Image (cartoon, rainbow, N blue to C red):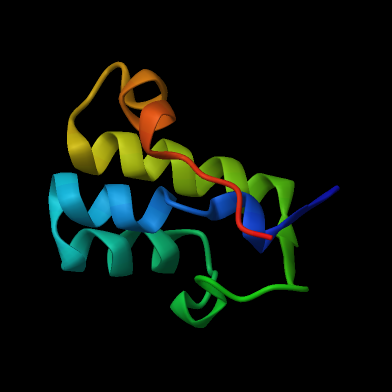
Length: 78
């Protein structure tokens, strides 16, 4: 299974806002996804990597309710 990188819209920015720029690097590196995919259309990552970005982002933020905290900041880019 794959997920479009556009589904990440707002996620790296939220991780950076809550945990710093280095956390974004660590999170993406931990799932073997290059940061260059951020904001790019027409690219896909594995579902596993997508979930890993969310899980590692939550750990970096230390937020047990990461998804709920993240939701108001999400947006769809067309």
